[in-house]
Length: 96
Image 1 (cartoon, rainbow, N blue to C red):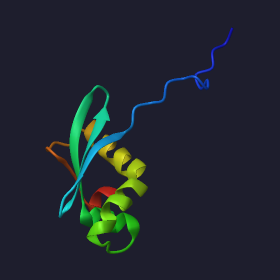
Image 2: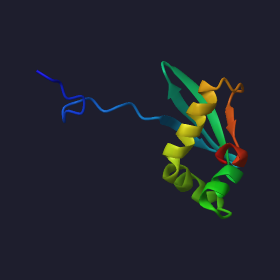
Image 3: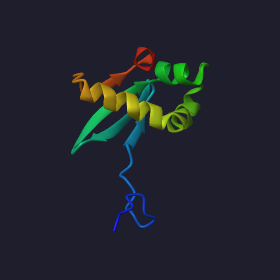
């Protein structure tokens, strides 16, 4: 009998990003890759770039959540490529 990997009772996958922390210069977050957690930081300028405009400080967390999947994807690709640094820094150039 064939199995259905997308069965409705399948366990949901773990969230890509957890533990966000807003600062005056950007947002720190933790991304899980394979079995390890990696600290990352996306700058305010990178969030401005993703939104296409200069954001007010109060808008950064909302922008982060709106682009969370894209931010997590870029962070994962950098981690898999072996980019060093703690936290892993994501700048506007990270999103070209």
